[in-house]
Image (tube, rainbow, N blue to C red):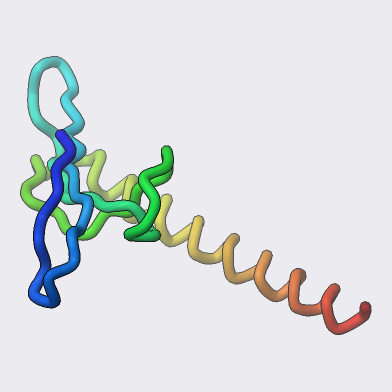
Length: 86
């Protein structure tokens, strides 16, 4: 689902929803929007969690997020080091 919403400044904001089901059971429902309000590419960003079904998968997702954050931090350090060498 995708739509346009007028913000408090009068700007039109693209919004959408991402709902993930497993075996016909809603697992998570996210509010999403493009990272750049002037574009609507294939990559959207989660802006809020509307609802989710608690379970083992949630703990696994949190663990994956922590691992991803660590990897991104390490990659950022390597990128900065290589820029400093150039």
